[in-house]
Length: 275
Image (cartoon, rainbow, N blue to C red; front, side, top):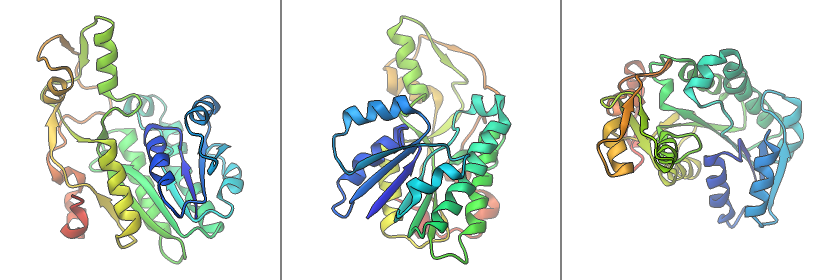
């Protein structure tokens, strides 16, 4: 079987590559991204000959044709995911997160792909910023295209991935290593937290077992930013409060904001609970 990961050089894409390498049926794993430097670094780390690399941009539909040719399974992880950059460049975020999703879905369908999985975000629920709004629209694109096609489609909704590139955990550790105080938006703000392994397990479960045509979520509780800081640093001081930034929510409470009140009417608990 041939697999394609868009955004394959990102934190999750890199971890998913390692997971797919362990699949006995994986004859080829294609990494699609626009960053040649990250691809070069990844080539030095992974020596498995089944891993192939393609330079391109999900916003450019033509660049998807060759990497999609003959692919069985597509994992769409490419996205603009940083809240600050999406707020500063909303049209760029729309082009990547919405148009890019539509392009990858259409390319997968045209190539006769068997399965397509969209990686979405908890920010898509009651969005207050550009990042969440574009992720919500990406989900809507998926839902609008998943019928009348032989390509089976799914969506999965992640919380904040610990130690992903650009995550606050890495920022705090870097600030501490330089002897600086840590920038904290709001100690009482709440966030959903997932490990990379939990995210991989969710995707693999959906890929192997669940019914198509739905957005799957990992049933979880939120923690406060202060508690996360204590867990990461082992201390409750040496931070400075900078306030919530544009596009950020203060609270992501329990499971209710992994699924909106309106969508709750169509939610099946057996599918929602991923543990």
